[in-house]
Image 1 (cartoon, rainbow, N blue to C red):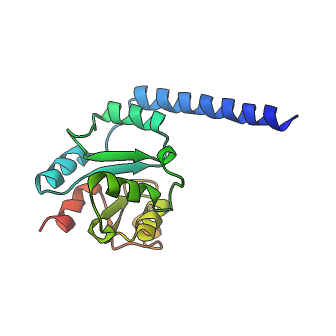
Image 2 (cartoon, rainbow, N blue to C red):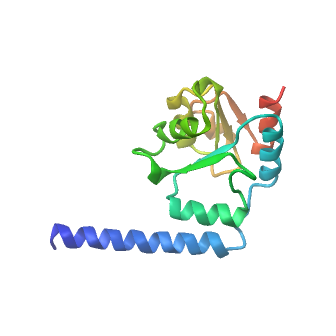
Length: 166
């Protein structure tokens, strides 16, 4: 097997994976927002807090997810970035920095990174975010998330306004 044929095979496998992911996120009934997430985004935005999303998914998958959830900028969120739009994904700070640039935020201490994985929390710490908030609505428990850099551990994103809105 030559280098070229193995590269082509990897590209073909990846393309099929992305197609399956897009189909799953577009059609599976279990795909829905964390309860209260959109309402939380609205509450934060009414308080003058910008809401932006970043993800380890590629833009092709992100578009399907945002359409499925109805989370579009500028109606529900202020911006989003996918991992294939930056040189390095999590835990590197590239996605946060790109969102900061897009939203006109200069100081990362004015950013609250909220996430449910180790990579999310490390990304927030690596970006120098003022708050790094772990939420246990993903596959990690609070006990597990506490072993990674964080300022707060919460049960859900719906608790975030208690910290950010004063």
